[in-house]
Image 1 (cartoon, rainbow, N blue to C red):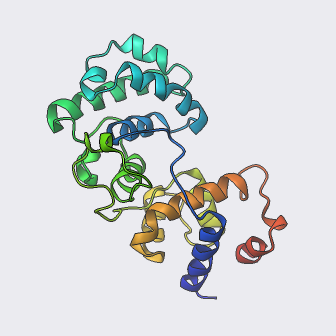
Image 2 (cartoon, rainbow, N blue to C red; image 1 turned 90 degrees about the vertical axis):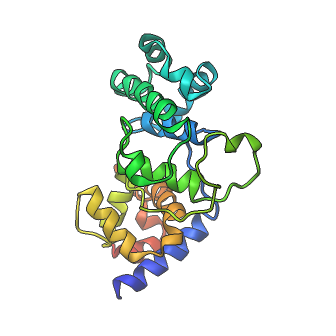
Length: 229
């Protein structure tokens, strides 16, 4: 089977398995998804979601977080892994956001990469989840920190976390272990308009079926076939 044909089959199956996908990170606007995503690496989403409501209640605007006492921020996010480093990063990101970007979260990859704690994965989440996806419901508050209308642009990359890396390698979609190279390989295989939701579908599949410690591939005929098990 050609790799492109296999990719199309996997794409359609993942759409059936996960017809509607949203990032598990709790957020209400572009500022919140940026900060939540900076906090999220090497930390379970549930843990991140336990600290962000209090964080955003205490610091509802970028200016509030930019002016925050680091020890007070650290106390709120203490359960997050690498909390000391991340407390400095989110304060620095909020400072840059307020003073350099007028509190408007940029939608361009090169601009987002200037922020502390933002690599391609974090930037791709912000762009794909906030700017490239039409909201399921209108929220007038959502416009406060935007630079463009939601859903008005296409994603510029493919979110690659540990689940996406593992699943894409096992499916034979890439041979690389380098997230940047894996992203490039996946971008060549799948239509651009699918990138934002497909990355989440890969993540959910990796969490629920092809897990790192106890993969359940053999329990699912379709997935057993496409993995070649």
